[in-house]
Length: 126
Image 1 (cartoon, one colour):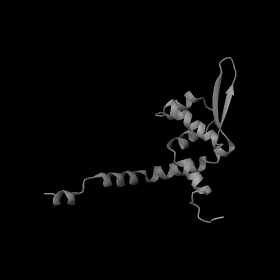
Image 2 (spheres, helix red, strand yellow):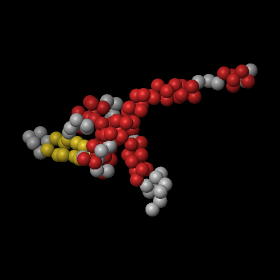
Image 3 (cartoon, helix red, strand yellow):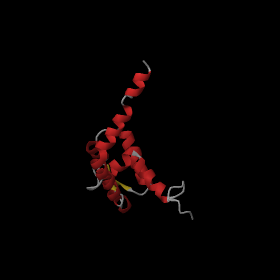
Image 4 (cartoon, helix red, strand yellow):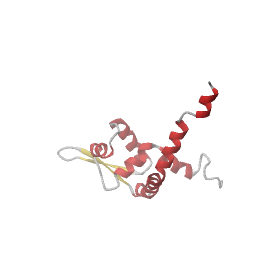
């Protein structure tokens, strides 16, 4: 067994892969307060297409983070809810969100600075 936590077959990379998909964390967070139907998730999240939501829910279900419940009532419906394993990711997601809230302005300023034209290069082309 290797001690390098970021090699291709390590568990740390598995966790980063789960969180690196934009929609995974958003959908998990949207399910925090209990089961939701897909239409409720789309309304709550905003900006996610039905296709991307379905793909995300399937991926989360495949990884054991979300459970799909089909109800065969008078009007059949499907709900998704977090599994116990899925709930364990809420604290890391909240931690990343808190970091983004605290340092997001600095990151955006760095991005703007990186995209701004370099005044030195403008002078040298004259």
